[in-house]
Length: 123
Image 1 (tube, one colour):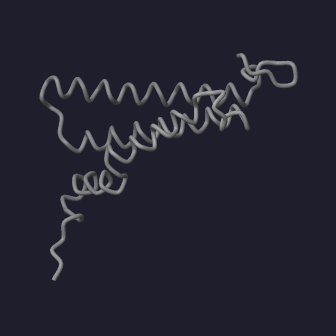
Image 2 (cartoon, rainbow, N blue to C red; image 1 turned 180 degrees about the vertical axis):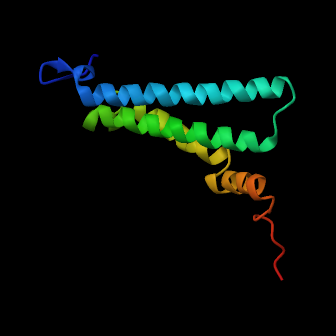
C-alpha cells in the first residue's frame, strides 16, 4: 500500500492483486500441509517421507513467494529499502541446510517405487 506507482498504490493494480492472491493461496496450502503433518505426528501416523515432502514443498513455496514479492517491488525489490532480499537469502540457506531437492526427491522416489536409488555399491 505504501509503494506508489503512477499516483496509485501498486496494490490497486490487477496484476499485483493476482500475485498477492496467488501468494496467499500458496501460503495457506503450505500452512495446511504443516498442520496436517503435525496432527499425524501427534497421533503417531506420520512417516519420514512426509517430512521430505513437506520440507521440499514449503521451502519451494516460500522462495517463490519471496521472489514474487521482490518482483512486485520492481527495481526497489533488490534494494535494502525492503526486507525481501534478506528473506530470500535466508530462504536460500534454509533450502540448503534442510536438505537438497535431489535428496528429498530420492527419499520420495524410494517411497513411491520401493527402490533405493541413492546408495548404490560401486564396483
